[in-house]
Figure 1: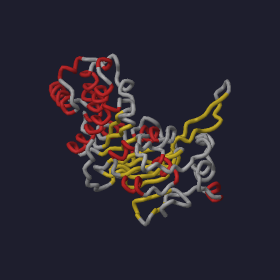
Figure 2: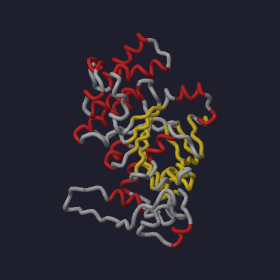
Figure 3: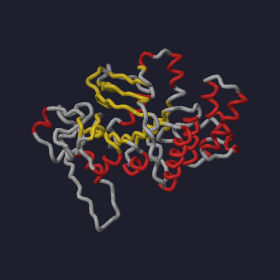
Figure 4: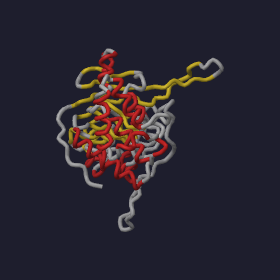
Length: 333
């Protein structure tokens, strides 16, 4: 794998303000609502044009739900999503259709995200048909898409089950970039693939970003993959952001105990430098009944009484205005 080239980050293209997504919990014969699962709870951040913003965290932290909310696949419970400063909630139906050409998503499982009854041609033609592109131009663009993602024109008549996992993900990537989007949300794009294939897909994403000027929101639980891909990283835990920083600072100077624990849990094949792990006690709290203070307080090895009483806000860490940590007692304060 090659290291991603440094990208010139200019202006925010996407702003997330106070986003909340709760899923109702029902019980009984009449399915009465008894509570809510706080999947994403008061999350705010900006995505800058041309960057790759990584989002990491354990399963259930809300990172995939966040991506789906941005794409409009889930309605928001609260909050605003602004694209180039314009709130998406105020968009008309026509404007939302136009937005779908500017933001696309690559899904985790390439087999589940492709219609097994459609050929590659039919899968890729669908977006062009929806947006009124002529048949002649569609064919030309589809052939160009296949070349961009490393597939052959002869693959157009094949069905998804005739491809390997890596090839299916290439089809998913081709579909995502077919309308020349500005933002691509990558939801665990290589986690379902063999390790031998992952690097090829990641390098393809980097090449496409360089060629097309794409902005990535890269969701993953694999810290090594996120480090390879990202300019900045958001660390999430139980629906909230624990830390935001430049990728290098996250890995070299983590400010939140949870971030440090995640990094030290990554296996390192170096007997001369054994890792010194922060022990994490207890289980992840229920998203239906999150702790009243810091979400991580019940498992944090350095938690004090304040952590159980008051939720910390994202504050500047290490005197770097771009390094924010939601911790009352940051490790790198």
